[in-house]
Amino acid sequence: MKTSDFDYYLPPELIAQSPIEPRDASRLMVLDRTTGAIEHRTFHDLADYLTAGDVLICNESRVIPARLFGHKVPTGGKVELLLVTRRDKQVWEVLTKGRKVRVGTRIELDRDGGEGVVGEVIGQAGDGSRLMEFEVPIEPLLDELGIVPLPPYIHEPLEEPERYQTIYARVKGSVAAPTAGLHFTPRLMRELEATGVEFAFVTLHIGLDTFRPVRTESVEDHPMHSEYCQLGPGVAEQINRARAEGRRVIAVGTTAVRVLETAARRKSKIQSPESKSDLEPETWNLKPFSGRTDLFIYPGYRFRAIDALITNFHLPRSTLLMLVAAFAGKELIDRAYREAIQQGYRFYSFGDAMLIL
Image (cartoon, rainbow, N blue to C red):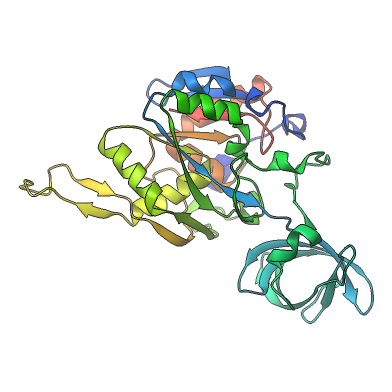
C-alpha cells in the first residue's frame, strides 16, 4: 500500500487556528459505513446518534508544559526544548531549537524566581531528537518551567491554555491533546449520561510522532512509534459487560482506539463448556494492562474492540488518517474529506469532528 494514497491538498485557510466556542458548537460530519451516507450536523447533536447503554471510551491524558526555554552553560546561547518522551527518571528525549546543541552541551532552563535546572545532552535519539539528562526529576517542576506546546501548524497564540485540554484531562503525560475529546462540554456529558450513555476512561500519552507524516514509500515499511497506555480493571470490566450485552463501544479519538485494540490483541479467550467445536461463537474478554503500544492500524486491519468512532480531520500521510481509513473504508473517507473541504470544514486539532457509525 502506497503512502501517497493518503495524501490530499488542504487549503491553508481551513486549518483551524483557534478553538470554537462553545466547544460543542463545532460541526459534526456523520458517516454511515453501511450505506455510505454523509450527514452534516453540529457536535451537540451527538445525542441523536447514541442510545442508552452505549459506552464512550475517552483518553484522559493531560498535556504537560513540555515547551521549555533556557541557555547554554557557560556561553549563554539561547535554546528552546520540547520534551518528547521520558526515557528514565531524569532522562528525556527532546527536540532542540538553537545553534550547535551537540552531545555534551549543558543547558540551564529558565525559571522565574529561582535557580534554573541544568540538563546535559547525552546522546542522539533519531529523527533529529536528542537524549537529555537533567540533574533532578523534571516532571514535578514543569508547571514552573514550561508552557503547553501547540501543534506546529497552529500559528496564533492561545489565550486560554485549558482550551488545549479536554475537560476530563487528568493524567499528566502527553505533549499533544487527544483532540477528538476537545468537543465535549460538561453540559453535553451530563445530557448524554442522563439518556443512559456511559463514559469510561483510558490513558494514552501522546508523543510528537503523532504529527510526523509517514515518510516511507510503502505504508507497511513505516516504523511505528510507541506510546505509554493504560486500561484499568474497572474499565475492562465495563467494556466486557457492554459487549456481552450487545451494547456499542465507541472510541473518542484514535488514541482510545489504539488502547482498546492493543488490549483486544492481548485478549483472553473464554469458551463455554457447551461448545462442541472451534466453529461455535466465542467470547473475548479484554484484560487490564499498562505498558507501551506500537500498534499501527491501516487498511486491512480487523477491528476487534470498537463499534463506532469519534475523530477529527487528520493530516495528510499521517498514521491517524490511515487508522480512520481502516475503520471507515478508504473510499468513504476519501469522499468525506473531499466533501469536508468543499463545505469549508475546519481541520486538525481545533477543527471540526467526524462520527463514524
